[in-house]
Length: 95
Image (tube, rainbow, N blue to C red):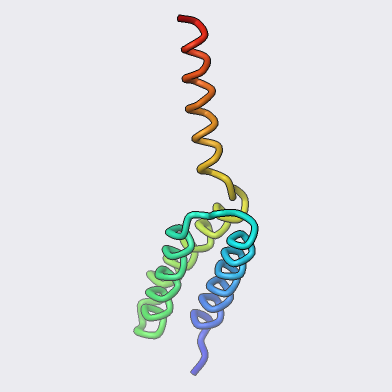
């Protein structure tokens, strides 16, 4: 039987994998945020089918926020690297 957890986790998994493939063709994104989303969808779907509805819903909400983080902040590695480089170059000029 198809449940709400099946549908929600499949849609979230397909959306995150589609976003990863799109970014992989143009950038070099980190793999582990998308892998965490996929594993969370798998565990939430299994919990939803086993009767752990509230725990499955909690995991799917957490995976949704993780997906939003991947969607809204695609270059988080570049932001931290630029911040470190600016700070070190600023300190070097004062010496």
